Length: 235
Image (cartoon, rainbow, N blue to C red; front, side):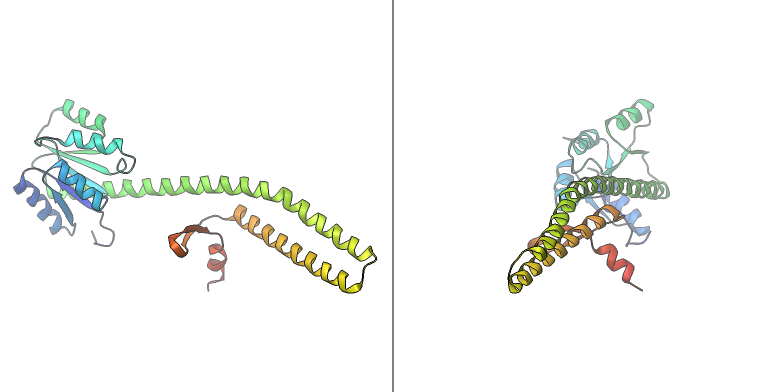
């Protein structure tokens, strides 16, 4: 597994020798991982950098693995972390308890590194699918919002352009000095062009299939509706 696509992993185990052994074994497979000897320490590390996968021992003093996964699932920021439970317990009831409380996968000790690596690969695949689903849902929400906004803009915009056209005709029919007519005509022409620009933006909102977020000054992020234009112009 290359470092480029390797997931961020956090291993939690109060047994330091077991913790280091797991970390060393994964390192031999090209998988880097941070370590914590308690749930409190793990939560502090999560605050610094959100992991993709947590590999956690069940039995620990103070707070155990079940308490940890329950707290993660209750927090909107951490509920999506993939959680692999490591334990010496082999009973079916224990596995059921772990899965019900929010554990994604369950491995009995002693752990074989090849099996753990395989579970990490599965976790990575599931994480990718989850992110694609979230992205798809975001895009669906954006498309629905764009359609609603476009509909609300189109109605008054159509009326605005129609009134400008009528005003332009009325100016030509009114007895005014030519200089005044010319000045009013220019203002109406500019207003009409601005209205047409708004219309083009509305069309882009409706037809956009994908979006990119562009960061402007002061860290403000906005959807770049012109990104599809630049993409089509590239050779």
